[in-house]
Length: 246
Image 1 (cartoon, rainbow, N blue to C red):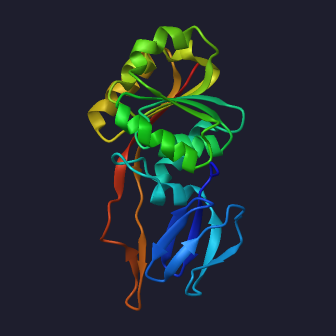
Image 2 (cartoon, rainbow, N blue to C red):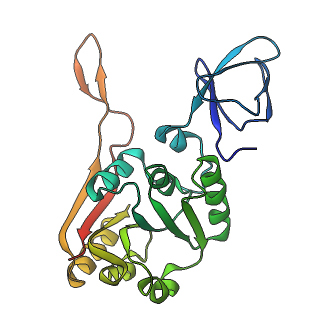
């Protein structure tokens, strides 16, 4: 087995499979070669061809196992764009959940230490990191990060903190001890009350460039009658507060 899975695609069918595995479909049995690679074609025993694709970010969101509502790709894009996180950065990620954000960060080349208080969620996240091919970059730890803050603050500082947890303000309080000078803190929350608490904690902690955004996106509909924003779907997903260590 490899630490990376591939998408096998035929029309609108997509299956996330690992090399060396076998999977039955109504189009026939797929036997995925152990040496399969992106760009290959695999046939079922009935002769149906499936294209082999390497996983990209949106594929992680669509196919990794979920333990709750993960951060949307557009929100992840904002986190990465506003913090500038990239290869070689050290990231402290709190509130792993399914690990979608952690996987994106790991695939961008960051070394991620991620805390998840729920042991079952943490187990799912670890398996997702293996599937995403980033288990060597993302260390998913089971536990309450607030109990580890003294140890973390005494170690090598982080370049970025990403927080998606109800106790984010407690971590923000220690942000200047946890991050390098000029490092970023990004707090995501589905509720405005938690967002306000995080923003106030950032100011009280002496962080700079504190900015809070509501993340809204509208899909467009085009028809013969005209063009307009779609009336379907959810436009609002949450609130994002970003700040910088002095």
